[in-house]
Length: 139
Image (cartoon, rainbow, N blue to C red; front, side, top):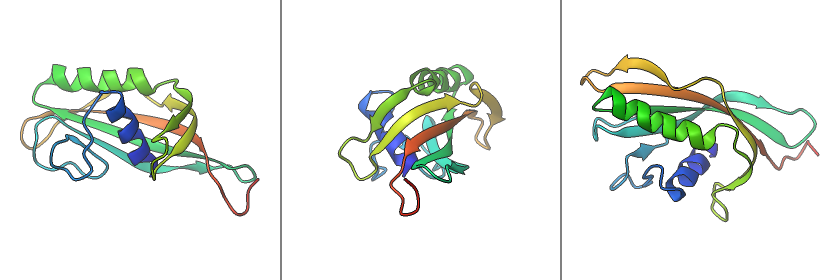
């Protein structure tokens, strides 16, 4: 759910449009659909959890696809600027994906991963997000 919390947070800031129904928006928390040209995927992959304390540190990848290299890099950089070094922030406050983010650290700068099968440019950035988690076996 951290990917949903991040998508909603960025949507609330006006950085992107996340529509969970997939009708109006161009941000997704799963694989990218074939359209639109400008599309963003925010997906969790791996990470770690503290053994004793209620903190998890999932990793999240943000993939930006756009018709031009400049458009993709600009959007990926905008997201990087908002997320990198963000700390002590509640994501999706009051929502079903609410998460208290202790910190967010970019693991790399927006990176060009080439073009897709339709000639659109793609950039990715990976983040590590520490957030609090209620857990039966941790304090």
